[in-house]
Amino acid sequence: AVIVAPASGVELAPIFVSGDLLGPLLIFTYIVLVFLLLLNIFMAICVETYSVCTYELNEVKAVNKANPMLVFIWTYLNAVRGVKLVGKETEEDRGTPAEQQIALSALPEAIQMRYMEERRKMNDIVSNALAAIEDAKRRRNEPELYNTSMTGEEEDDGDDVVPPTPLHDLRPQPPEEENVHMMLVHRVQLQRMLEDHPVIQEICGTRKAVEVIRRFQVDSAGGDPYDMVAKLQESIAKKLHELEEQGMDLTFDEMEALKAVSQELHSALTESQREWRAELLSVLQMASLLSKALIDLTNQLAKVQINHDRLTTGGGADLRS
Image 1 (cartoon, rainbow, N blue to C red):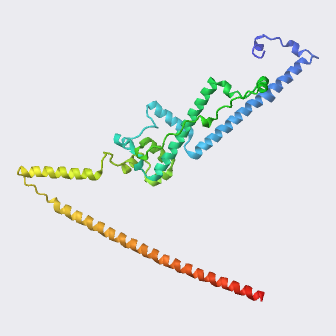
Image 2: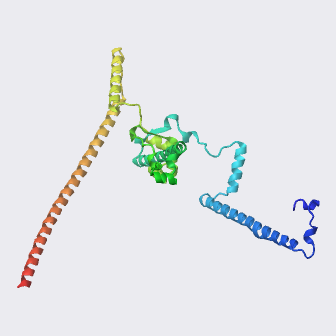
Image 3: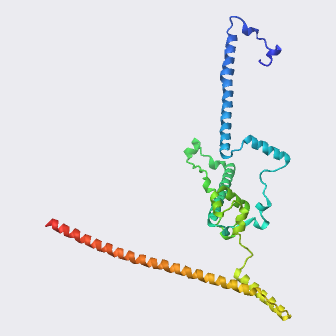
């Protein structure tokens, strides 16, 4: 009526007839519905939306002081120019292909524990999801097993209704404990751990996962390192012998410097061992003195206990007499 009234599509004259209550009643109803109900509901929605947006903006500002509108404009301008502000790492941060993963056993124990904890959480999430999917399949295929309501005839017959299988019973069995020495941690996983846990950053002394991998990575060529060194020495000696048989006189002036370095290292190691033995001997001596002092203290406490018993016995006899 409101839409077609200006085009003379609705006759409003009967409403405004004098002495008729229909016109005032319609106007009063219109005011109540539009101004008192619909308009108030619309204003309440606007106020609620404003409050929620203001709260979310304040929460964002508490973490990031940047203006969200400026961030949006800056992001949009860079998107138009084809520049990505996220997901872009330098070659130094990515590292070489050989630096994309590291053995878990080569990392510090704190990182190993954190990684295993996160791994267990992810496995639990996967197990719960698989259990929910399996439970949904069983509900579709066997709905009678999950029908907890019973008709009167079923109650009279005494038929038992099979209860639904609990969700935890459908959870897959946890996998066997994996060997930590065989597990590998990827650079992206390690970077996420560093970003989520500042304590790990303090332990590693860096915020970049590639630097942690470079610091703790061990050559995984395989084999005993002592055997490899022995084979290398044998190969070098064999080649030198072949060169000498061919008439080549090889002189190594660096051997004297190498011997000097070796002697210095040997003397330094010997001195360290001597100091360590001296410190260990002093610790053992202090432990022996402490043990003797504890034995003397125990003996003195025993004497005190004996004297106390004697005094107690003698005092009780005097009181009885």
